[in-house]
Image (cartoon, rainbow, N blue to C red):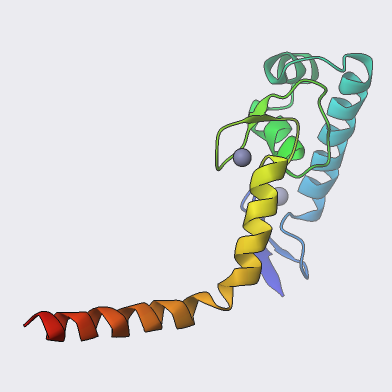
Length: 127
Ligand SMILES: [Zn+2]
Ligand SMILES: [Zn+2]
């Protein structure tokens, strides 16, 4: 199956990979460089990491968001409540709430339908 590399845009044959083989190698290499730097400077900030390793800040952030890297200082913010976090996309309490929301999701369409029916019923009553 042919795909477009998400990084360099080149067409390549690859099953489920998002990047072409040469970008996978480059990303691995960048990841290792950042990891090495973080090991020596665990409290380094994203901008320092980027400057020292030559890896773009967006890439460093994506490693942290993926949970592949852990920084000691929280430098990311929860995408839901904005609380500082060390890795991932959400803080622990938001993650818990989102998980619950997923479990409830199966029930939601029914409630929504039920809510509409009730509202319409009230509408008729008021007239
Ligand atoms: Zn590529
Ligand atoms: Zn949060």
